[in-house]
Structures are given as C-alpha cells and as structure tokens.
Image (cartoon, rainbow, N blue to C red; front, side, top):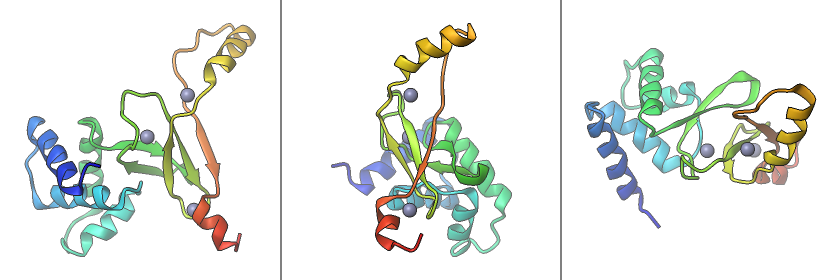
Amino acid sequence: MISIYDKKVKYTRILKRNKLKLTPKRIAIIDYFVKSGKYATPFDVWIYLKKNFKKIGLPTVYRNLEKFEKIGILTKVEGEENRFYYGICKIKKKKHHHHITCSFCHKLLDFDICNFEDLKEEIEKKTGFSIKEHYLIVKGICKDCQKGGEI
Ligand SMILES: [Zn+2]
Ligand SMILES: [Zn+2]
Ligand SMILES: [Zn+2]
C-alpha cells in the first residue's frame, strides 16, 4: 500500500516538474483529494479550502483544478446533471477504464470492465463510421446509498 504521505510526495513532484509553484493552496488541494479518495466538484473543493483560505475565490479553484488535470494529477469526469467532477483515478491513467456515478450522493468510482470492442463492430457496420474512441457514463445507486434505503 502506498501511504498518503508517499502519494503527496509523488504529486508535489509532478507539480515541480511542471514548474507549478508549491503554494499552500495547491498543497491543500492535493491533500483534499489524496485523503478523501473521492471525486469532487470545483464547488466542493472551494467549500473545503475556504475553511483555511477565507478569501479564496471559486475561479482560483477552477484554474488550479484545470492545471492539475493538464499535468495528469487529476481526472475530469462528467457526472450527474452535467456537473464536472475532479478526482484521482484509482486505475492507472494509461489503462482504458470508465467511471460510474451515484445518482444519490454523486460519488464517482473507476472500473476497468469494458466490452465495447464487441459493440464497436456492430456500430461501425450500421453507421459506416470508423470508431476511434468512446466514453461511457454509467449511473446508479452506490452500496452505501442502497443501505440507506430512503430512495
Ligand atoms: Zn478513472
Ligand atoms: Zn451513493
Ligand atoms: Zn470502454
């Protein structure tokens, strides 16, 4: 198991390599994602950061999350209601995978099951397209929310 500390070291190295300054805010953002292990909207991150950085604006959070995505620390995923979520993929970046989102608590998880190859041929036959990539949005109700029962 990689510890939270090791993960933080890894991501701060990526920041340095990409010539992004290690500001307290950026460290706090990394902290947030490493510790929670969850996907979050820019708004969620903003609420969290406001506890320690009272004057931080939402645009600053957006900008930093975009930068983090560009340098490969975070992944941006479209979730419920066209909201965008950021998070650290549990599955290695290079490995093809998809995301599933809970319609109730908006939690997002990775999974590396995909049988699109079978569908691809059929779709190509029907449309005449040569398919280059695909995205999949899978929605459902997570284990925790199913236990809650009030749906
Ligand atoms: Zn992922
Ligand atoms: Zn849920
Ligand atoms: Zn796939």
